[in-house]
Length: 261
Image (cartoon, rainbow, N blue to C red; front, side):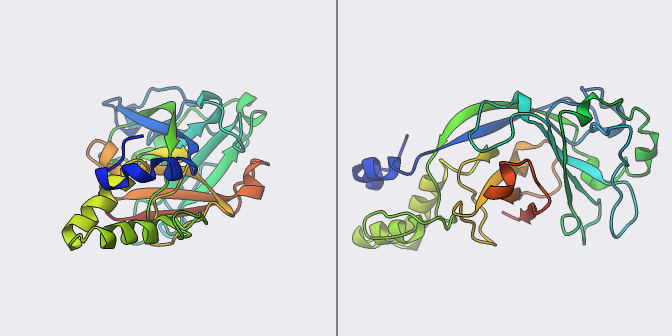
């Protein structure tokens, strides 16, 4: 773990809070929605999803148009991550509308048994949304690797470090003790947070608008739009699920949040 110089003396304390996460590396296919020829069951951003023959394609709550696939995660492609499903597909869909883009997001889980059904293959109806600005980004394939995650100042998980119960207060104390001005304080915080702000599954969420705590919720997706070619926006998507539901592959209470940078 690489730490800012002012935090090196606290390395042993910080490492106590190490979690295992799965980093997501995105590779553009160069193909847009209607030309996506990647496997229907592979992990991806945008493109065509796996839809069992007995299941409808999701439609937007407000615009009544076909939704677009934000992300599909095939859990069989992930390194083993404790507490997370080992098989099945997690899918996040959104409306292509500025006002309701993630307000009406849909999260659903396709079980291993459902993946054995014949899939939908005619996606010609998606031509209705193919020219939408949110689909200017080509399909990206996900590749996964295990990575250590040490937390960040936005995360509200309960910890105990140097007399503090969160990293935000701890970093603030270090800044004050070393007489840092506002700019240097922000640089210190940003340098520390770099170890946790990346596209991933698991680990510490870096959401700031709604402080997040692993005490009750698990991070099932953190997707940074800076990793996406021609992305509309520069923020990140966060998907959180109650831990007790995650072990049963139950995503009915999943929360989808989009935060601008």
